[in-house]
Length: 85
Length: 93
Image 1: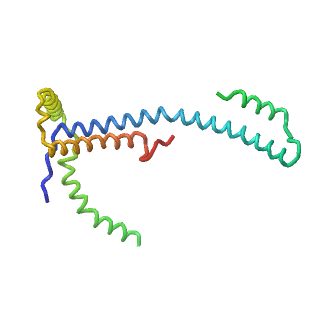
Image 2 (image 1 turned 60 degrees about the horizontal axis):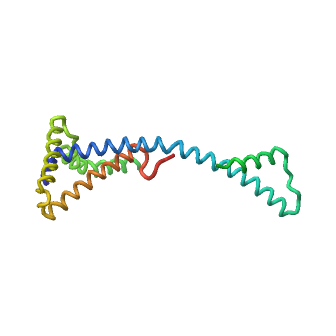
Image 3 (image 1 turned 90 degrees about the horizontal axis):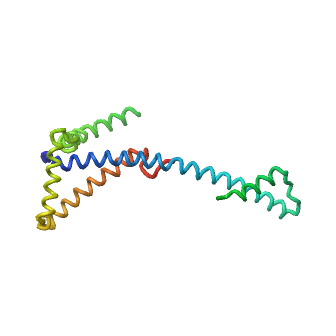
């Protein structure tokens, strides 16, 4: 068996400081990206709700029926359409 | 039987783990506090080499070898990032 090589201290400190720097960087980036993703999920959910309402209306119109809207739904759709950033 | 699988895995891995430990004990240990000044001296060495132009005299073979070592050190950063973000591929947000 080949005897183990004596690694220079510069390489050893560089390796382990790179490892520490990577752990810190990964943790920080994760903490930064987590609320952004939660916000995007929330917006996606709201948009999906509005889209589903509009699809329901389109389907009812295509079937030849008047879409049955409560005033509440109508108000929600208008407010969602107006409030997109 | 399941315990046969485990015992077979143990007998297979023991010598290999032993060789791994034999090399890792010397090569993969973190630097002891006495070695950190040596590392700083090494960095100063490199800086003086850059300033005096000595580093321009390195052979391609040596430069390639040093490049491989630097790449390995950079890969440790990515392993650290995987540990920090709690996953291997991508951030689990």
